[in-house]
Length: 274
Image (cartoon, rainbow, N blue to C red; front, side):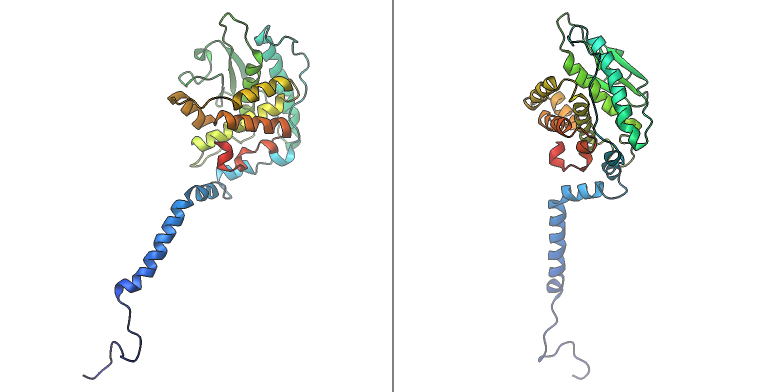
């Protein structure tokens, strides 16, 4: 038989189809396995890539251009619990002054919330009427701060309400500076919500760290000791706001650092905002 041969007895034989494709299939399988194993890390990288919403807030100019938050709050009554409404109204004025002074170096003209509403029941709030239990809520569209001040006939502990007020004021700051006003696929999923809420915890602690540091320490320790209850409401709160332990850690950072940069939850790894 003449003519060109398909193979030569003196050379290597051509591998079959299976032998030719097996290395490619192995490499493909390894890549798929790596992608599955690293999916959370890749998701984090995508979300922090330049141009993403999280990257925009993680690198916000506020972190470089602003100094310490907070200060004293002259005028607060010695007995905070005697009239919580009066205490909270005085604190609101202090928070306006604190945030105005803090944001000015970054070029922001601070505007107070349109309204600070103290409500006896959720139905009196400007928003969130149908949400699960809350101690306070910020209505971003109306820019209204709502704090629940229930009157059950017993002496009320005002400091947790003060922290709630400072937390909702932090949401107001996030809104007017553009931190909360972002667009993108990751915005306001549960991971985004936790970073937003834990940053508000941190900023509230920063604002109150010199107002009543001992009461703030007690509140933080109480948050750290909260049990992980296994019910739908508690699970939903943890998913959207973070665990009590995470809240306590970010409150401590707010007390220790006292700055917006120290409260940059957007740069933190996922395990720190759980």
